[in-house]
Image (cartoon, rainbow, N blue to C red):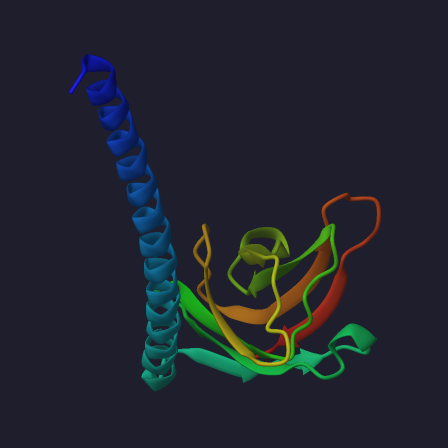
Length: 168
């Protein structure tokens, strides 16, 4: 076998090995991302049940505003001041339009200046089904008296829209 033939075989073997590795990585990432999504959904359900079982947790159903965007939305929210952690459940929350996002705000009776505290920002809805998402705050919220879900614009030219509210 000549030297050129060996180089050509080596190059072909290397190219096929790289292709096989790329295919395996692609399948592996797709598989593990599906598994991770299932685990996260299961973890959120478990977290929600744990928070609901805690008598110190606050909970409430979403109260809809007159905004037609959320006329069919249902769900609830549970918050633990001790853990500074909460879980929201949405049913039939529409996907936000391009250039908008959902933002959860918490109002604390012990907070300074009655300014709301950001709880979560997300850019997806539940579609026609049920969806859970957790939220945490950067600032401590001890006595929340109101949770507001707003539809906010990425450009700040127009006012935000309050869509849903929980008052425990």
